[in-house]
Structure formats: C-alpha cells, structure tokens
Length: 135
Length: 135
DNA sequence: GCCAGAGTACTCGGATAATCCATGTCCGAGTGCGTACGG
DNA sequence: CCGTACGCACTCGGACATGGATTATCCGAGTACTCTGGC
Image 1 (cartoon, each protein chain N blue to C red):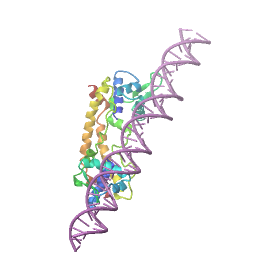
Image 2 (tube, rainbow over the protein chains, first blue to last red; image 1 turned 90 degrees about the vertical axis):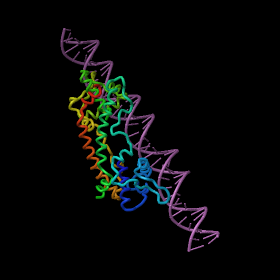
Image 3 (cartoon, chains in turn blue, cyan, orange, brown; image 1 turned 45 degrees about the vertical axis):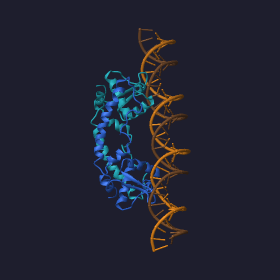
Image 4 (cartoon, rainbow over the protein chains, first blue to last red; image 1 turned 60 degrees about the vertical axis):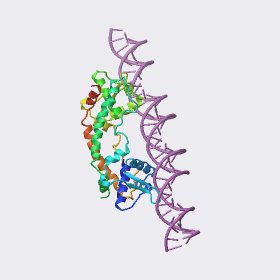
C-alpha cells in the first residue's frame, strides 16, 4: 500500500513537471528497492485502470486518471490484499458451536469495519498526499 | 486476530458453564490448529492482562476480566501486530523529495485511519460477539 | 535533398533461484494431586 | 488416625525442522529513434 502510494505520488509529481513516461527503475531508486517490485505493483494498478504502460524508446508509466480523481480507496481496491483481519486459515471445528458460528459472526463485524475504512480512504486523494509530502 | 477472538469466546463460554481452567489443547481442537499457536497468542493476551495461566494438575487458562469489559480494541492492542498499513520496509531514498517527505505524511494519514478503527473496535465486546455466534 | 530500410538502445514482462517468516513438531521446566510411610 | 514426604501426571514455555510466500536476479519480446545507403 505504502509503495503504491509512493509510486502514484511519483507519477503525479512527474506529470506536474511534464516529465513524460517514468521508468520503474527511477521509481525504484526513489523507493530504494528492486524495480521488479515496482513493476509488480504497477501491473496491478494497470489492471485496475489507474496507470498505463508504454513500450519503446521513451517507454515507462503514466497516470491514467487525474490525480485529483484518484483516492486511496482506488489504490486499496486495486491491490486487493485481502481483508484487514483475515478469517481462520484452516476452517475451525464444525462440531464446536463456537467453531461453527464464529466465522459468519466475524464476517459481519469485519465487514462493518471495512466499510468504515473504505469511506475514510475515499476521503483522501493522491493529490492531497503529495501536497502534504512536498508542501 | 480471529484466533484471539475465538480463544476469548471459548473462555467466555467455558466461564459461563463454570468449566474452569481450559487447556490450550481444547481450544486448539475448536480452532482446528496446533496448540502451540494457541499458546503463542495466549501468551500475548496474558502479557496484556486479559487472561491468566495456571500451572499444576487443573492447569489451563482463565479470563482475567469480565467478558463485558473486554472490547475488540483490547484484543487488537494486545496482539500488537503492527499498523494496518505498514510503512516502507527499507527506508526510501532520502535524496528524493518524495522519498524523504512521504513517510511522515503517511504516518499522519495512517494514524488518523487507525484512530477511526480503534474507536470502532472499542464499540464491540467479546460478550456481544459470543452472543452473535451462538445466539 | 528526400525517402526507405536495417540496426540499436531502451524498456516491460515472465521465469527461475535465494531469502525470510509463519507453522508444525519436539523436549525440558514447573506445579499440584495422589499415595505410601511413619509417628 | 493424622501429618509428611515422595512419585507421578499434566501442563506451559522455549528451541529446532519444515513449507510457503515474498524478494531479488536473469533473460527474452517488443517498440521508437537513428543512422546509412540509394534514388
């Protein structure tokens, strides 16, 4: 999540300076990691329609939307890293009343929590994050 | 988190039935996992003062608080699994303005999100979860 | 001078090896009960 | 009959293998620019 926001902030900053397609290596330099990590995340962001990849000489990545229309919720949904609190890894004992009844109960509790979280995430845009970063 | 709630629900149910100290093996049977996993989590819950461990013949675990005074926030804080959205694993490039300015900016954003989450977690008790489970 | 073509430099994308974390298994430490012995 | 001391059964707690997942390295595929040769 943090790296994804970093990537989008970098692309936003580059877009403001008219520096067209940015390579994954430049972003990796800023994040201080390997380019393949950036590419993996960029691939998911592209599948979600947030960025575009270009091939050729002036290859690289560009934003597919205006940064002001890009909320953290979009990033969160694009990553699809599963729920905040995962349920049981191995299904609990169905013989036990608690083992049988707890998962659906927790599903509701966790669902409500995620709803709240999504609404909060939708209130912040990448633009605002960048302004707070370099401001 | 889910397993921790499962454990506390089990202890609550046992407490209602006057079945004193419950062993980690019984809980593992309900959760369908290894007892050591239960013990690991119980250890953290004990360090946080939520449960007590008893040694000897009728050994096992009991609740240290009334279930109605036990909120999901207590569980969340006892586990200390780190923030919802972790920051950069390796510190980003301090030469880059974004790499230098993003972590503190995200700290604020994430902090606000966690505050909201904590308030929501404090609104639910283990008692209520158990009632929803077996009710 | 203008156009066509091959060559080149640069990137993305996927496949493969290495490293790290979580899970599962095992053994020692500690405690309370049950029993046997002595007074 | 009662008190004490020993042995035992049961558990927790930590240390050691194993499996999966994430990360890092490497190589092939594709595209736009550029340079060269011919008309």
